[in-house]
Image (cartoon, rainbow over all chains, first blue to last red; front, side, top):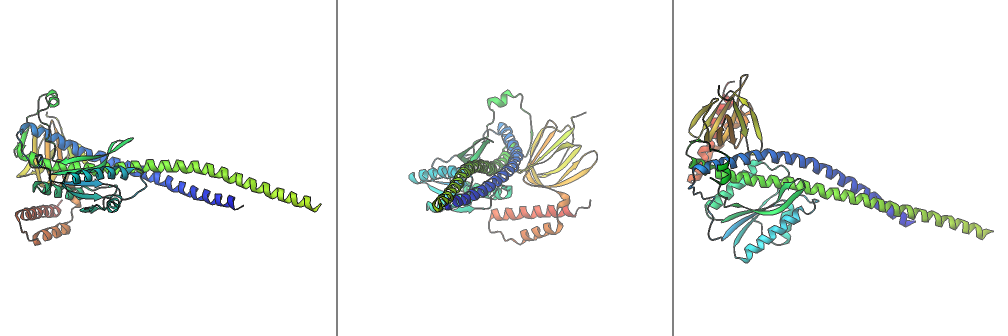
Length: 293
Length: 133
């Protein structure tokens, strides 16, 4: 008697959960499309900057820029971890945080001072649990990171790097490779890789264009490198936003399917319980009638 | 007849414009530049100020803030940090920005440079927002 009712209660709860996860899946899908659009639109800028930088590098080959020079002694570094503000997105945060933790341990073992900056509440909670001090915490980056905000952070990193307070900048985030593949990685943003100048591919592409430079190529290149760094950091944020929505969609899809399976099992159990209850009631009545004869 | 000009206006967040134009006028780091069809290849640093776009039918104006320009085979790519339609600039807001910049007291060379560039930007915005159209 009580069993059928208990099963019914669970059945209702699971049905509600399925509705919720299904809705979350749809929301994540819609957000993913929007984030994806933003990422593709922003890619135009990054691509153009890279193209310009390589064009310029052909004209100014002997460039020495503080952002590209690698330090011999790696004493102090900075690690930016991009996690999400909200959970229910499968292994998204776990993947990033695992990598980040590995980096933190590595730096600690080698006696390097590591400044840790974390974006996203999930990441902050994790660091709090691990009792690791977080220098700067960001919680404002949701699925629509704005360039202005990233610009401010990038500007600060450039300043720290040029002043030699830090020797490298790493970013741990989930990189968006394709709609079906996203990988958590740690990427080194500073020192910047030197823009490839006269590479074989560029030479094969035909005669290079004789540009007129205003001001000189070296001067422009000096300005374009910080812009390239900012664009790359911005891309990390956009990638992380896109990946988060994909992870959430996949997680919620799995949850919805699991709930559907569970509903099937539970309704079978419920029907059986109800049937056996009816049977036992009937046999009680028959038994009672028999006894009265 | 040289190839017609095409303008691609890109900000870090999005591609704002990608269209055929007749001529362009915008600030470089040291002064204005005008671009007509058939311009020789050019790479330059942008300044802050008004971007004037002339098409056969209309003339439009944008406010751009720094960045880079590349002219290559008739395509003008403007990579700028920020671009807004000049009509949407607000004079009182620009004035407030200018006031805020003017009241800052710089303590170092970096702060001084930041102050003067902010002032310059606000003045340019103000001038553009007051420009009769």
